[in-house]
Image (tube, rainbow, N blue to C red; front, side, top):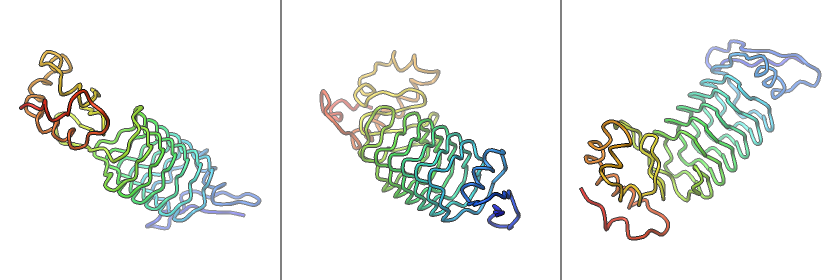
Length: 239
């Protein structure tokens, strides 16, 4: 049986595969293995549970409501893909590029997102319980009402959505216990207590940046703080 994968807007055939007892999953796996360009592919509601799609090129693909539980999506290129409502529970997405992808309401429970690029992705109302986000890039990611209980971000178990700040000299990500500024990640308390000399040695221009933004950033840390500290974070916030 021959199955074709077509483009969402033009209907053009992007890939076709013929095999006995063929399925869309088998066809898509064949496309990934062949290195086919599946940009803009229409795969809405497809059953791709457990599919091996490592390295597949699916930029801008429409995968709304797709069943991808346990799928191997290592290194998959999904920039701008539409995955709203997709079920990616337990999927392996290490190193995948999901920049600008729409994952509204997607189920990513227990998914492996180690090193995944999620910059500017839309994860509003996404379910990320127990997901592994170690090394994931969340700059500009929309996480409003996302469920992150038990998710792991660089060894920190999250209980609420991180706060991401962009359009500054360095990107900033604030969680319940840590703040990352550029490549520097430290606890809220460590940032509060750093000396000018320590900040100056982090990067060129770091001290001037810190003097300008220290008070508002530590105020955000305080508002988002979780866990015990040596002293209430707000007590040592200075301009």
